[in-house]
Length: 126
Image (tube, rainbow, N blue to C red):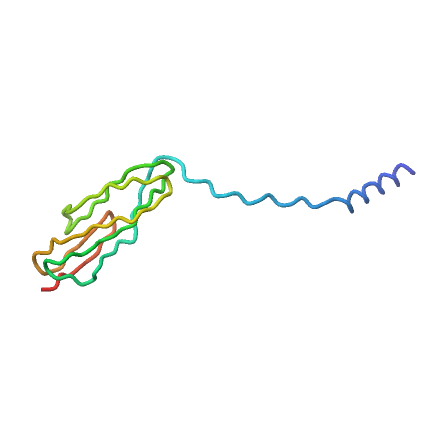
């Protein structure tokens, strides 16, 4: 009986004196692994109104969503015809803005500019 009372007393003391265990610290997200993989986003043009013979600047963001460094060929098409290309080399997880200056508007009319799945419709004013 005395042993039981002593054990209960020891357990009570341990319970009162026990310190809470802190939660583990959050860990940083694991960086992407695997080969380089590229996505393009945010296709823009300036100025928004272009006359024949003037220059327009097209820009797009290229992101390497893979874990390794790689090179990607950015292709600007006008009406589905390749107009300009530019290679960009990015480390895994990195992004870069790529720009193209275009002065290829000999005639007024509507044009479709595209990079990958992104496209812009631009009307060249007479």
